[in-house]
Image 1 (cartoon, protein in one colour):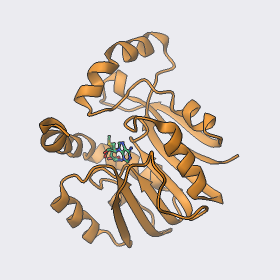
Image 2: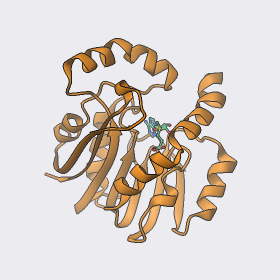
Image 3: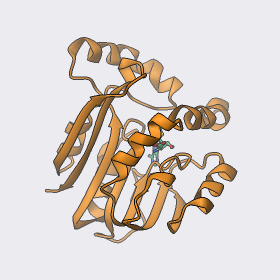
Image 4: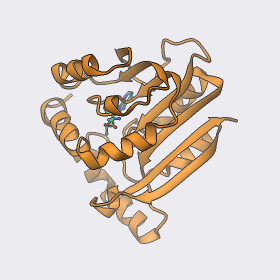
Length: 206
Ligand SMILES: C[S@@+](CC[C@H](N)C(=O)[O-])C[C@H]1O[C@@H](n2cnc3c(N)ncnc32)[C@H](O)[C@@H]1O
């Protein structure tokens, strides 16, 4: 991991994704979470204050270990029991099949290099009646915007430490064998259009 990814990007991430406007969207996205919940791509723990009381236990994982002191403090302040693990979601996760009532990703499917194995693991660890809850940014349905997303994606990958802004999130999820039961597509206010294309929804096992 380079100097930028290790020292600068985590602070940039926490600052840019941690504002009150994002908090409202986080609360809304996490509302459906219940029971034993797994969050993949935990980052700096910005979702922690927004989990509903319907969640009984939270297991969180990320391939990186960012801003450890700040993140541990957030975990300590969270009223839910939280287990944090450093794991690559593209590999086999150390959980039995059908372990979780909810699996959550927020602004993470853009960053996982190879989403197919990660989505396959989400399928495996979800209970048969469990829900995959996602709030992601991705590819625009507007052709001109999508073309600019393609053109500028290599730059975004550098600035965003591997983030892709041109992924068709609903297609990725559906092609992994999920049925999307709810999908809200909207533009995030006060955000550059290329990064504002939001996909918020719920998917269940097909
Ligand atoms: C843009 S951040 C979003 C963080 C957090 N979900 C949020 O909403 O603030 C994307 C996160 O995905 C994590 N990530 C990327 N690839 C991963 C992988 N293969 N396995 C686990 N986490 C990964 C990154 O380390 C980063 O913390």
